Image 1 (cartoon, one colour):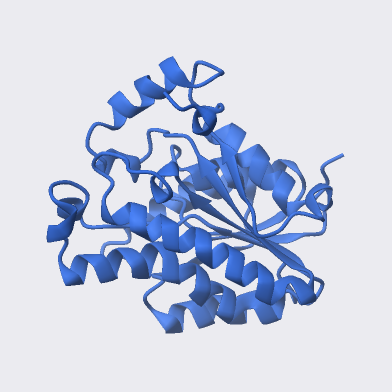
Image 2 (image 1 turned 45 degrees about the horizontal axis):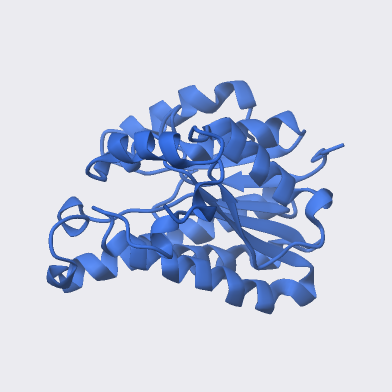
Length: 258
């Protein structure tokens, strides 16, 4: 049985009901985990209201603002976890961003600022959250992040995000090596293309989804629920011997040559 009762899980990156992070949060909740979530702060509080309304049925005990470029907000969440939970068992990292103009056109023309921004939010944020919260994983734990095949193979209209995902996957391996002695496991899920707020910035996303539906062994793409179930597995004792891995949840697309 997949049982996360008594586990404290913080899920980052929920934007709306299409978010993969939302699918993961639902499955962690179904398995019994106590949840905390963040929202991206903005002047009008639109993101906060949207996230609060969406996650209300999951009854998260911590809901806080977090822009991963803001160290003070990262530390504030660590303090809240320490005071309200005492420890952290699970960290879900579902954060990625790049300027739209840096996803298409000539990759060599990527701006210095755009390159740095994509790597900062999409890759370095995993290191930063891990560094800021690993001391809370006093009983060991599981960290899971989200990748995509564009980190290992060229995907049209992905450009700098592909480099960011490549960096993210290598970060998973280095973090797994570092944190293994503390019984903290670090893994990534490389999900098939799903129509989300983030993926909508990728030109031709629906063409990509239809291509996967034709080529993948299962003749379809995957759902947020399926990715969520895989994440719950990686966070459970059923995956106690798995770390430093990239698990493809993509209906088998990754294995195909043509």
